[in-house]
Image 1: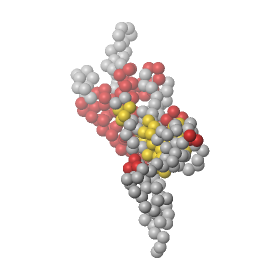
Image 2: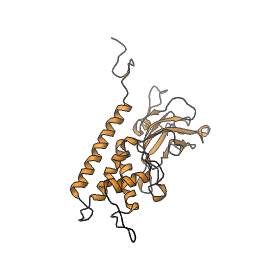
Image 3: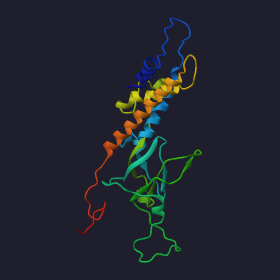
Image 4: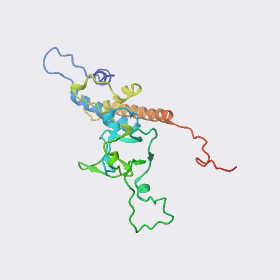
Length: 252
């Protein structure tokens, strides 16, 4: 459904906020701008809680250009998390790691390692990535992607291709009414339950109804729970037989 269709559904069929005046100012309780902000909040909240928008094709959010010597990069604000990352033309994903593991690495070529001595991993093509590095941007903590080791001169300008979980990136203004919702079709009407809750939660003799608003909130929460179950079902991978791993030993 388009944003305009969602707005019409919310106003006319859910809130019953119709104006039938022939002339004069509208007698609608909520402006289009207000309802669009409620729809925006509902869709972004739904996407963040269910992790339902997974993207591996949109260049603006899935491609990262490396710079010589830079290990940590700020990701777009719409990105919630990184599912996988692949360097340049490689056909395999980089290993997922973490700040603690990377920064406690002992060089494997040393039979003994003295932590008091400096050791620098030479720059090169990234082999691993991690997303738990802290970076504050405009006084807000940003989602980051860090690579290991640091890119060298040969990697400058090369791309890292990511699969990410994100929130909707479309606008929610009157100029965006023709844009399609990025929430999967099965849940688009469900998101309007939260928008209706936002509209009705304030008690008012003309507009507010605390009982009705709570009904919409509960319907929204039910939809989120169902979407989470659906996502787990579609992303579940059975444990394969890999000797030496996953609880399987080399000997009987």
